[in-house]
Image 1: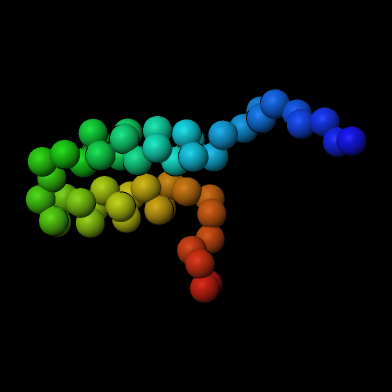
Image 2: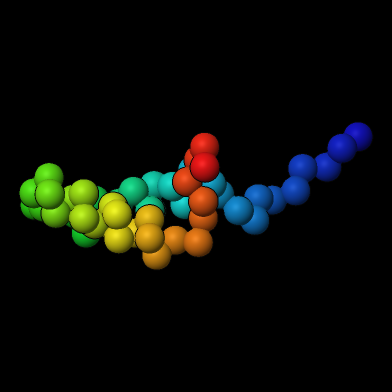
Length: 52
């Protein structure tokens, strides 16, 4: 019989927390401000965009 281990990482919880944080940071931004916000976050990230 296999024992079930307790989760140490909850991906759904993490995604919800990130989405809430981004929503709070971008609330009330114009489309141009939102584009600049996204571009700045992507530039600061060390991850490569998908497909490149």
